[in-house]
Image 1: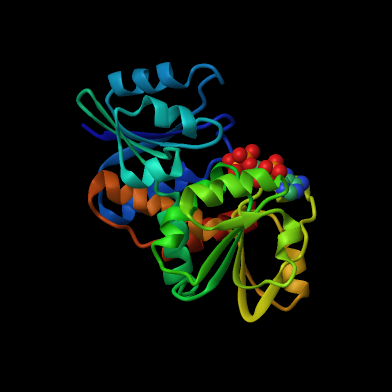
Image 2: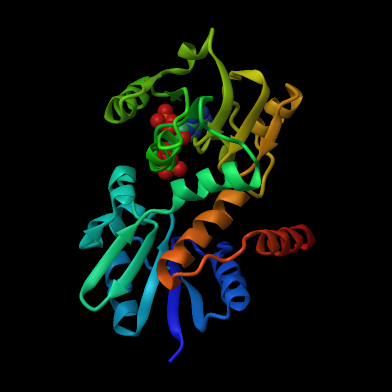
Length: 267
Ligand code: ATR
C-alpha cells in the first residue's frame, strides 16, 4: 500500500510542500502520496488522529499549528525541544514522534547552497518569534563568533537570548555593531514594513526567511551592495530533511528547486 504523508496548515492551499515531496519521491523512487490538509483552527489534533487512523505515516506542520504539534507529540527530538515547536511528525503505532527540521534546513541552505560558512562569523538574527527560536540552536552548533538577537520588542529578544546564552536587545542596540550574516526571521516583510538597517561587513549575506516576494529587508540589503538570499532554499532543505527523517534517503534539492522556481515564475 502506498504510504501517506501530508502537510497540515491553515491556510494551506498555497503550500509548495505537496509539489516538493512529489518531486522528491519521484527522484528517489519512493512510493508515497503527499497531500495538503487544512483543519479548522480549533481542530488540529483530531485531524491528525484521523489521518493516522487512515494510514498516515508522517506529516509536516506549518502555521499556525507548530506549537500544537509539539504538544501532541509523545516523543520529541532535542532539536524540536530547543525550537519549542514541531514541523515534522512521524507516526509509528501509538507513537507520535515530533521533530523540527527548520533550523537544519537553514544551516544546510547557508552551508551547501550558498557556500556561507558560519564558523567564526558575526550573526544577527532579527525577530524573536517562533521562526527565530526554531533556528537558534542549529546556528549556534556551527560555532559563529557571535549571535545577536534583535527584536522590535526588546524584552522578547532578551528572554530568547538568555535562554540560549547569547546577547540580545532592541534595534537600537545594533548601532556600532557589524555583521557578516543578517537573518530576517521577523514577519515584517509580509506587511512590507521596513526594519532598521544593520551594518553589514564587506562580504556579508542578508538572508530573508520569507520567499516569493522581494521584502523591504531584501531591497535595503541590495541597495547597500550586499548579497541577498530568500527563504526558498530553506523551504526546500527543511523538506528534504523531513523526507530523510521519514524515508531514510536524502533527496537532491537542486533539481527540485529549479523546477519549483520555474513553476513560480510561470505562475
Ligand atoms: P513567527 O512564528 O513567524 O516568528 P511571531 O511569533 O508572530 O511569528 O513573530 C513575529 C516576529 O516578527 C516578532 O519578532 C515580531 O516582533 P515583536 O515581537 O515586536 O512583535 C516581528 N515583527 C512583525 N512585524 C514587525 C514589524 N513591522 N517590524 C518589526 N518586527 C516585526
